[in-house]
Image (cartoon, rainbow, N blue to C red; front, side, top):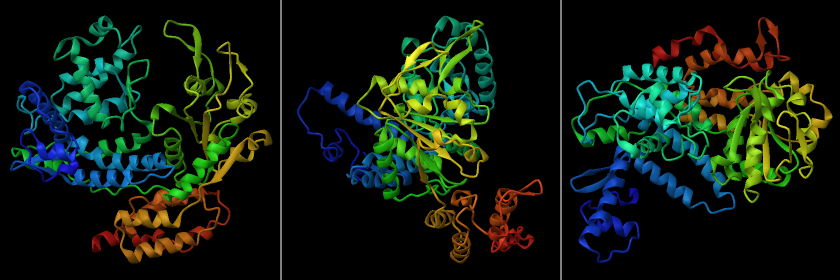
Length: 539
């Protein structure tokens, strides 16, 4: 449809059919009407999310529509062995492109045929994201249909979310049981009958941009979940969202809806395809017996690279990827499995993250599954992994998980990718048994990535050159990377970055934590008070 921009938009849409390579044939009038209606249905969807609009009887693309077409055309031209890995890279760009447009979508708008009372200002897709972020990143269609669909104003969203949160704390709460839902949340509003789930799934699909921002719909608990990969983007979009606007003209509304975001697209660390392809190849060679660990200081994009590699290995299927973040209190029971409190009191066996993704991998032995362990070095790794140190290497040996009372074998098609910061004190304490089972790949600070970040942020050429020169002169063990410079535009931003972030990598509470901090401080002239706001006033 995007490639048909500029063609005539009148039934039976012959020019569009030709572009889509759909063969025209003689059919009964009612069948032709059905086929034409399908075109109009898709057009309504694409128009509603800010990609296409009709003007003077012709299709026209918005800014996002044209950029999306260019992005997809570039993607389709990539036919090398790692095409899915390239797709994973572009997913991030795609999400950053469309999220602001989805957030702007208004229920009451010039395109809708429905009438709403005066004062209706809700943005339904943004409301879904807000609800999911406050409700453990998940939402059931029954919850949405009984609470969120009653909201027509922005001021009504938070009380609706609070009602769902309170209901979830009640004993016996089950969103898949309509009788229980009637008791806790009241009737569906408006009541559309048995097929209301289809209508609400449509809203979920829009909020997900199909299955980009939300996960696929095959979790057994019936909830839709935010895609962990894009939660930071969702948070930024929610925070940056402006007040709704009123429009009378359809074209003006769609062009505003499809306006490209002004916020610069984040540049991914180590964006060179060959670098990512190298890690993918390492995972394919060693992932059936070792943990592939991406090692580097804060801000080098280790987590992002891990996600992109996981997307390549899983062929873009996010249902075959699970991410868990270690921390100081993380336990063996959370990672592998053990006894956990049950709703009715007492304890019951509860599989951990590893067992969950491992069972999926065992059920599909011909497909690679990936477990991402973010911040591996922040936990007591020896206690969290336990006997897994042996069985990650020897996949054909089953072992007993006492809390689950079952024997488990680690699937050979399960790849474990970890991220580590070498500055974490626990890295020093890792024993040899763990180290020999890690295939460590360094993710260093990148001069090229920094320059691209500063360019996208709009930093002036001269200043950008000075910052890049200072960055190139940093010692090899500098405790931070290029990612911390996202959004830096001028000397005032650089001043704030130092005083609010960078200096704490060198000294904390008056104690020097990095040897010879002068090696990093020297040359960073923007830390001086001279740059505290002066530049912005001049600009």
